[in-house]
Image 1 (tube, helix red, strand yellow):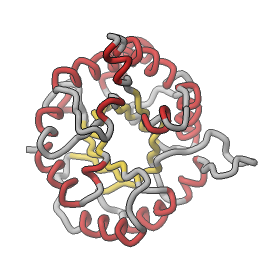
Image 2 (cartoon, rainbow, N blue to C red; image 1 turned 60 degrees about the vertical axis):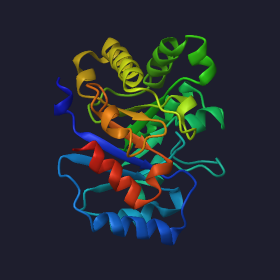
Image 3 (tube, rainbow, N blue to C red; image 1 turned 90 degrees about the vertical axis):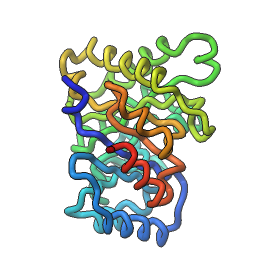
Length: 252
């Protein structure tokens, strides 16, 4: 499948940022803009804002997702949020295995695949993140890590063309460093081949994003790569002007 037939995604991951008022203002500003009709725009706010932002974006081009879930539907899991809860709040997407969840909170790919499977059971689309650390990159282990993370993170996941994967080189998260377009294409192409090894030609429909210090200056080169289907954007997505500039530069 040609990359042009896969709808591009621009996803904003706000992490633990913005007040409720600023989050609502951001969405109101985005709703007032003319977004390209052939792209998908996802916003992942803190969980406390899911319901309000889902209400604001109903019937719009902006779709709301959660940053994390737990795989059980209910129970004695203090502080956790289940797939049914985020579904009730209006979220239709969820990030599973963001590099910060893996490397700060110790989430394994086995945990990630259980979360993604639980999301699917509720009709929520998982966005599964994988990527190597600087140490792994310097040791020449990038492809080995990507193969292991891809296959194990998809182990409990049903084949679904709506599933989203994000390649996030951990060394590029919040550092200002960005993979070159050549590195991003090589890694994402390799991830797609791993998906192909278990799901066959469905791999051509799966959208794979790049994440890691994405900004308005580098988005055009990154998204021009044949296998890069969009971007998962962190810091630069906290301001509607900079987020919109990324979208504009990425859709020229």
